[in-house]
Amino acid sequence: MNALIKITIFDKSKDILNHKNIMKFRLVVKRYCRCLTFSGWLVLLLMLMLLYRIWLGNVCSWLSLSHPVKAKTLVVEGWIEDYALKNAVDFYENNGYKHLIVTGLPITQWQDYVAFKNTAEGAGAVIRGDGFKDSIYQAVIPRTVTINRTYNTAVATRILFEKHPGWRKTFNIYSVGVHSRRTHLLFERAFGDAYIIGVIADTDKTFDPEHWWKSSKGFRNVSNEFVAFNYVWAFFHPDYKVFEKRLKEGYTIDSIRQLRRKNDSEFK
Image 1 (cartoon, helix red, strand yellow):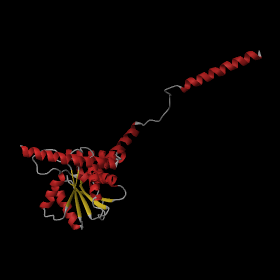
Image 2 (cartoon, one colour):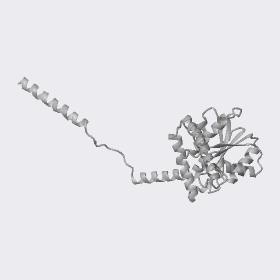
Image 3 (cartoon, one colour):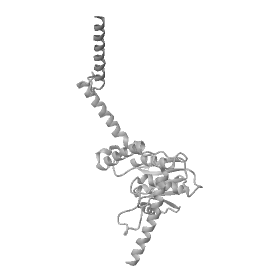
Image 4 (cartoon, helix red, strand yellow):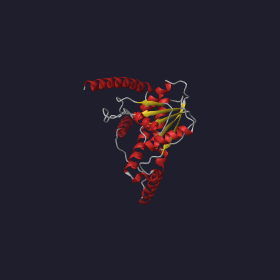
C-alpha cells in the first residue's frame, strides 16, 4: 500500500513539472492595466495642444541661435541674401575684425555661362561692391560634394585655418535665421574642442519669425531645420579625416575639369 502511494505522488509531481514547462513557452499572457477615461483623454489632449502651442511660439527663436564670442575672425555663410551680407560687413567693421572668411557652395546651374563658380565668389562680389577693402578668404567645397554641405564647408574652413597658424582659434559664424543653430553645431563637430566658436543669426526676411507657421516658406524652413538639427545632434558624428580627404580629392578633380573646360572653349 505504501509503495502504491509513493508511485502515485511521483506521477503527480511529474505532471506539475510538465505543466510549469508548458507555461514558460506561452507567448501571450493576460494582464490587468489602467486606462484613461474620457475625461483623462480630454485632459491629455489639452496638455498636448498647450505644449504644441508653446513649441510653435519658441522653436523659431530657439533655432535662430545668436551667441557671439570675442574674436578677430568672422566666417560668413556665402548663401545668405544680399541684405544679410551687408549686415555682416557692418558687424565686421564695427567690431574690429581682422579676417573675413566666406564659405561657398558650387553653382551647378549655368556653370558655363555665369561669372561665378560658387556662392563665395558671388558673395565676395556683393561685399566688394559696398567698398570693402580687406582680404576675403574663401572656404569652398568642390563640385564632387553634394551631401552634408554645411559640415563640408566647416571642414573647408578648418583647412583654411590650418594654413594660417597665426590666427587665433576663436571665431564667429554669421548666418541667417533658423539655419544658425545647426550650422554652429556642425562647425563645433568639425573643429573640435580646441576652438571657441560663436554664432550670429541675422533675421530671415522671407517669412514672419513670430508666425512662421502661417506661410509655406516659414513652415518648411522651421520644420526642416528642427528635424535636421535633431538628426545631426543624435546621429551625425562624422570622421573629420574622411571628409578632409574627400574635399582635397574634389579640389583636384575640379581643377582638372576647369582646365578641360577651358581647353574645350578655346577649341570651339
